[in-house]
Length: 470
Image (cartoon, rainbow, N blue to C red; front, side):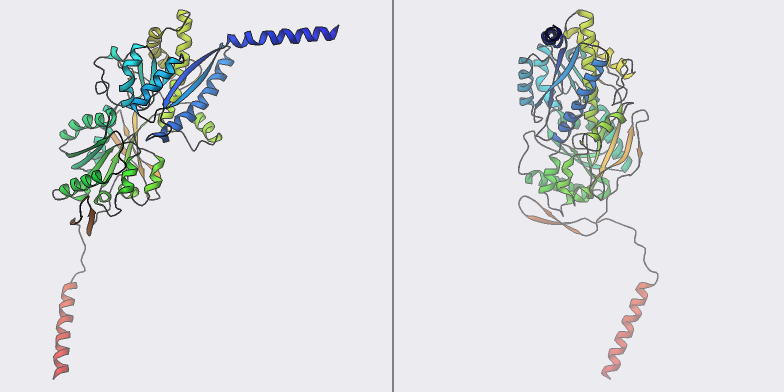
């Protein structure tokens, strides 16, 4: 009889299990990141951080007795706006109405109409172009689109401060001709004009060229023009590019004039792993690159887990922003359902700014890894500092300084400088090899009386020859 009772109990437990599992609702969140393209270093890092976020959020939900669990569906956009739209449509077709990403501003611009029409909530961890540049006329147009990173108005303030601080008077701006790269150029242009910094502009197509020769020649010619007017130390290249900038460097001759001036990058190439392919070149120019930098109370805990899983030394900033975006989406979803009894995207859009601030203050018992997040009227992050990273003489990324939002100034640890050349430099162009000489005036301390000594020796030599003949 006892055996029968045990079997009945086991049977009842097995029957009950499906209903128990059914009570725990899965919150599916799509993730649009670059896993194989020009931002893949950062896209893979976001995937790693969200893998940790999934475990931490699910543990939190279980401890709080909340009947939810979260899962992420990753899609590779290759930072291609067309693919981003296709993947957004696929995710929506699967019933997914919340997305972390996409990464690029061009991608956001291309999906914004579809997202708005279908009321899909997105939080981008890395899109930085100003709202007006990617097609938003007023804040209400951007109701469902959030970004947890500072916009390019802040970043270009930081870059302009770099150039001014170093004494740059002329720049060649090379930019990827998409919403992001073009937006950075258009945003920084009036700031550089105000500082009296002369510009030459060289865009390249969003469909990345395999042969960089024409663009290399254009950069070299622009630099040579500037070298007729300015000192070498007063000239720089500003690269608004993703990681493909290092492919371009790889194709340039190591003696190119490109490597005789400082380079300033941006958040599209800062801390890229692809510098390993251009060691011997990139460290000559520094590639001083700005990257939104904000750390919160939970940052060290994330770093510890990140290292324990073998992902690397620490996650990049975009991964921190994505991690916090995951928490905000889950917490906002739960609050929305508690308010309305169901998921409502309009209520969700109104709830996210409130939850973001509460999450930033630690009111849910957890803290952000990317620091305090305050959203402006455009649903974009309103403030933040920028770290300035450079490639040191060991071909490693190192911290050069911090641009502080509050003071609008830079605290330098390693102020940029270029080794000034005084020898002839052979510059390769698309047609012929042109030899140009860059003359730089440097103060050389001479030995007193050295010319006089030479003159006396010369006279003695002449006397010696005459005496030998007589």
